[in-house]
Length: 434
Image (cartoon, rainbow, N blue to C red; front, side, top):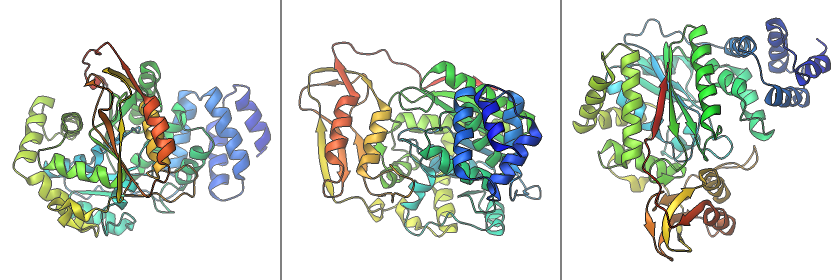
């Protein structure tokens, strides 16, 4: 393969054949193509895009680059959910046990934080003892007994995505529709799921800030998912404010427990219920979204979702006592308030800036090899539409001896726009595509 010629052709807007994509991905996984050439192709794809056929071919090549899981012998519909990433998005931690309590099998393969957004595996690392590195046999066995599992990628599972995922994060090529589609759908199709609900976010805290770009991503995900015989529904949801009350890994596990107790913030709770309901309809467990929503509320109210959460956490080595005592989750020892500088209404929040502020504290990675501090983050005390006076607290910040605090304060203060006008209330979910 003439790799420079392939890069040049894509740089000039040409189309790559499926066989060329397959040879390139195979060469990268096997170590025959160096990262600097892969980075160049990623950047060419970022600027030039890919056709539907190219993106579907890339997804198939990545999906078959390693092990795939066979769940056909398990009883129950296999349905999964994935979010394109946001700030404060802990829905997966609540949704997986809720869906399993309702009778679905949820085979969730998740990743680390990407850019300014949090990662499900980082949140799970905050649970004492939780083990996300399961073997294939352990994964399949747990799905058969518990009904849900959230694991990370092993070296054998979709290795092409595992390598590309890390490279995209450090080469500023995350926000590419074909690369996002291939990354998500290759893992989902290889995990054994037979249907998928996608949460595609838009707004200041999303990888796709505009509705138009997010809608294009959602349609591409649905189209490629269906081409892979993976029925897919996409929900366009707002990420122009942090989702829920907490941002940060251990803090988001606390909110997860609060929601399962029935005491969590309304936005996180309602989005989780709606997306779980869509899963139940896709899996044939309920005939309508309305009946599925009612079923989800019942599982939250009667404690069966919480019981399933504890069963799932314990099955993967975690301490189920966190459901009764969240003080077992280790938070950073120091707290500071960030306050409003003026009086008025919170007109808007630059949610991406808040995500970067959390990373500056240590909640995410600024470099690929950074260690995540699981105990730092913040509580969101004011959201858009709330009135404030000068000096009112906006964020309660958990930090470790001031590390990153000054930069986080600068980012957070610039993120809040305070003015005389109260913004109109808007729905968290804009539309459903599928």
